[in-house]
Amino acid sequence: MQAILAISNNNVIGKGIGLAWHMKEDLQHFRAMTLDKDVIVGTTTLLGLPNLPRRNVVQLSRNRKLATANDICYSPEAAFQKYPLGIVIGGAKVIEAMLPYVNRLIITHVNIDIPQADDLVYFNLPNGYRVDKEYKLSERAIVREYVKC
Image 1 (spheres, helix red, strand yellow):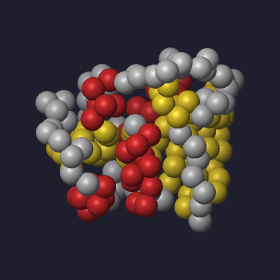
Image 2 (cartoon, one colour):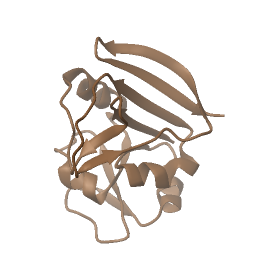
Image 3 (spheres, helix red, strand yellow):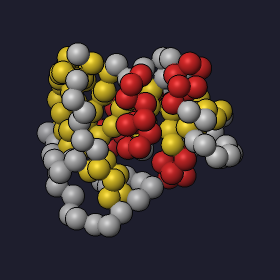
C-alpha cells in the first residue's frame, strides 16, 4: 500500500478541508500517480475533494458513506484487506492510521512556508522510512519516495 501527499517546509499538508496552496505540477503528479487506482480517503478530506474520475474512491470512516465515495471501510484493517494495493490520499489522521500498512510514502516537498493559521493540517514524516527515489518536479518542488525500512 502507498500514501501520497504534498508537504510544505513547515510540515503543512492542508488548510481546512482543502489545499494550503495551488501548484499545477503537483496536481498533475497526483493525478498521474492515482489514475485508475483505489484511493483511500477520510471523510473530512473527501468533503473538500473535487470529482476524481477514473479513481475508485474509498472512504475510511466509522460513520456513513458520503455520496461521492464508491465504497466505505470502517477500519484501517478492513481497508487494507479489501484494497491492499490502494493509495492513501489523506487527510493526516487517515495517513497516520494507515501507516502500519503503507510500505511507500510518495511525498512532494514544496518549497513554501505557510503562515500560521488555526485551520492548518500538519504531518510529520514517521520514523522507519528511508528515501528510495528522488526527482525534481519543478523549481519549487522535489518528490521523494520513501520505503519502509
